[in-house]
Image 1 (cartoon, rainbow, N blue to C red):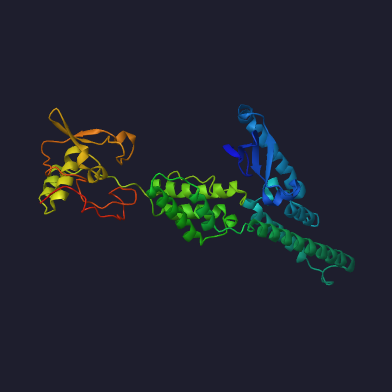
Image 2: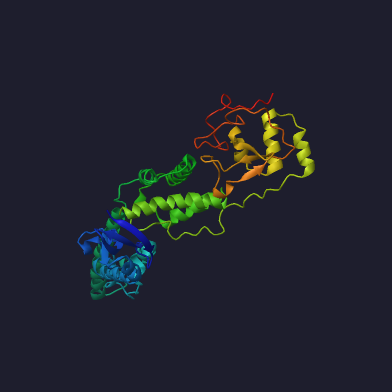
Length: 390
């Protein structure tokens, strides 16, 4: 089984990865689909780098070797670049484009420039009233060649675009495979990931994953940033980016359109919360409410515990040592936010607990993860709570 380790990006080609195959370590890069004919149809190119330590030290150099091979193949085997070069030979001026001219991000602009140059030849006058017969014949012959070469170029460009969409896998299908392979410690986490994937599915109309461009990715980021705070934006984009990494690892796509997108400064501003003033607390406790709501609010106000910590309290969490009563949030198996939340919280003398019983102290509904602060609680527990609030 292959083991994939560190990832490094050296150029606009797919990222280089450190992989272990049959006990040996290699630097590996997915070969862009339009270059695979130059590599006998292989999907990945590898360079051996010895043991793990040696592989890590030489990964940059080996990746550079692979990218250099891609550059050479790009110039020698890219049918679009070749067709463009043949057409340029027939055009005046022959502008020199950079090596990146026919890569995905620049291909459309380069193609439009080339069409414009070809059009200047195709629309040259051949009317005998304006040019002599010999010149007119030369222009017409040139126009015939340019027209044929332009047609050949357009065909190669169309073939490339078709090959880019030949993956045949919709984003929703790939997302499902990717998210099914993750081990979740909470149902809420899984639900958040699947909601994020669904947001992109809906936004982009569930496209073929190989047809998603960097522009689509940017538009999706702006779409979410207009509605969500940074943390939600980071989670959702991170999930979608993960799906594309999965597709890239499967060699279904050449590059991740979300790879280099920055979220810095994006997202709506977080809501700043302010503590309740004494007058507000006094007004709150004058309101009519149930006994358990009053007790829950009292514990929150007097201890500073989190809402979920209070709502999930069980009678076994209330202990007494040396006459000091306290809430034990260190119980094994107790649901808490993180490890630092495991603590002992004294019960203030102003808190009047109901007669001791068994089970949960409160009757608030629980969600799939057993927490009480879920947006859509599923399980009512009034039949097992032991508190008697009158």
